[in-house]
Amino acid sequence: MLLPAKSLKNKILNDPYNALVFKKGKGKTIYVVGGHIRDLLRGMSSLDRDYLIDDDIKGFAREITGSIGGTIVEFRKDHMARVAFKEGLTLDFSKPEGTIIEDLSKRDFTINAIAWSPDTGILDPFNGLQDIKKKIIRSIAIENLKADPLRMLRAYRFASELNGRIEKNTRQSIKKLYKSIRSISPERITLELFHLLNSENPSKYLKMVLVDRVLSYILFLSYSKLEKNIKAISRFEILLKRIPLKLKVELKTQFSQNLTYKGLLVLEFLLRYSRLEPFAISSLRMSNSIVKRIILTHKGLKSFEEDNLFDLFMRSGEASRDILILKGRLDLLKDYERFKKIWRHGLLSSQEISEIAKVGQSPALGRIIFKFKKAQFERLFRSKDEARRFIYNLT
Image (cartoon, rainbow, N blue to C red; front, side, top):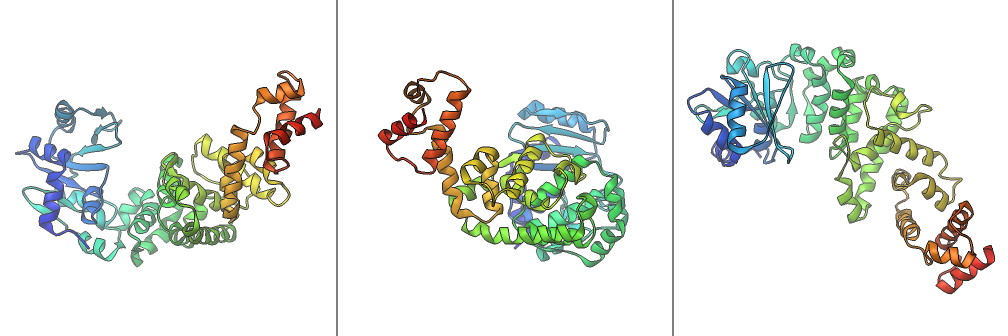
């Protein structure tokens, strides 16, 4: 249910950043536009605020930082000035391209072509309010998709956030223009795809991206492999209902590049069944930590049936949990936690093992400790006395 106009006004002006911007902009033509309005109408909060102001945008940004701090971010082009804050919030100031209506007409989707100012109230020339209410993603014009092909990928992301659908003509436009996605930088594609992977039910919308031919143009896997992987993601979404509460909380934490841990798991599913490394099968620009994690996970998946758990956990490290989840073996998560506890604090310390074995710091001691930890994990002994006897027998 959308906020009524009066409630929207209160929400906007009760925000201290908006209140300051409109106070400083009194007497000027200034609007808050785009995603901030969209999210407020849906009863959600947003870290980003976009404003159109018919004035010196850099000078206005300096006025804002003079009042509340923040850092002005420089852009190569002078079309925007940004004020960034440590908590991740940003205020973006742009000059309108023509009139306010002309500027809104050049935006991506109707849901993002809504503006508000204290003088005019809501401006909604393309019926974005109705589309938000009906959860429809509708492009304003095919030319707007051509102007920035990344908007095609954004359509699926917004649809996933609304748990809605993409309007028929918009999807037809995407199917005509899908090849132009290659003109976009890998960094921008990666960020947008990661937003989709982080969403509540990504499989539904990944299937749409696949059917509309965009996905296989980003990830260099066959249609059949991607289809198989997306079905696995769908099963994973069902599995999430049985995941322990502690892990559910962790799934929401950031892993790298704004990708959540849940998003990472979805990405690992999505890139399965390839003979190549993850950085070679996509046009994504992934951090070293993401690439390393995917490689470890996929190696562990291939050897899962042959490995004993201790060796799997030793080789795979933090990726061990990913492997168990991707395999649907939630019953083994406690074993992984027990492995970590034993590896950190065994029944005997390294010093005690060294004294009992009469071996100083050396590779030989390392091998003894490894055998000891593995034996404890396999429950070959349960008390300190049994543990000491195990060391004696080894030496």
